[in-house]
Length: 432
Image (cartoon, rainbow, N blue to C red; front, side, top):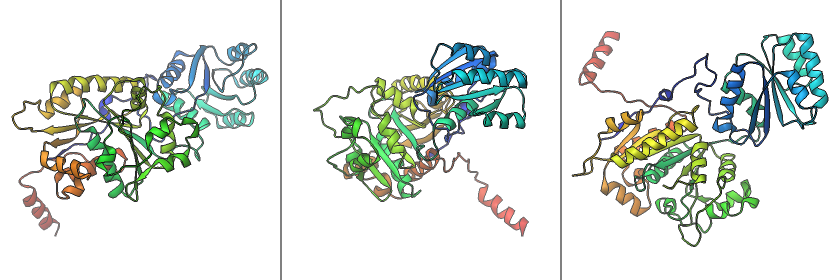
């Protein structure tokens, strides 16, 4: 029996207007900022807290941010003997005349290319227009929260024409063998087949990846060539490495060989994911069950995380650790979507799905019952579940999850009543 229950995303808390560092759901269209240096000069602790909270967000991970005490005058004094960064954020409570004078002093010490954002306490359109004419990149009116800071920096440094088109969706298992790859591949197939949307599946398990087997593909090249040739990596090179599985689905397959180890640098896959996102609406990241610097960074940087578990104690422990890490490292994102797989294995003691989800403070996105014949047949034939048995309730589960992770729709569990048909007919007669 399939159990669909798509979470609203509110379980990780919402922002408090009085606390600029509180978790704020950041819209998915806010793109990560590039590797830039930012220095802020704040007169109030609230503004300083908002900027420090923004600096801790995953979208600002590449930027180097430093917060100083003091406003415009302190900034002008500081840069008398120091080079200016890419971006200066200054708070000012000064009057109009004093603000102009301090900006003139700051302009004299700013290096070419440095952008300046002013945070003021006066909501005045004329002041905003005057400041933009003087070369100020943006004027923000206090109070501000971390979302406003992130959006402002992103809009200044991420051009709309070059910003990534798609979202990265990371699929990870709480243990090896829980079926995370199976879920990832079937969701990708549903996105391509039912939503008619382009999707790339990136198999990041270079040694033991199964994406090639599941999609019945054996490409000569794949993700290994991309990760070992970062100097050649661009959209044209990546397109050559993709194996076309269908009109809308492409595969960046793993070699599944042991001639090389997988001890990659922390940012080894960052460029690959960025380039892939520039060409398709959805990039499915099939992550292996390992714990390395690159794995952690890739997981925390993804736009969406789907966590697959089995209902036993070891999975619960691992899942709890992963959920805690994700909530801490992605405070302004929705919590991971929980998939409870292989429920109802004969003679196996297991934790009830509701109890498992309650311990994680999550609502299951899908509960998938154990079906050795269906899933085994699909795996051995290199097929998706919908190709093996189109009438299986699992097809609906993967279709709904595909809509959810792509933002097409959120489907929530609806309780059916035995009186439903009778009440429906009664309402029909009443309206007639």
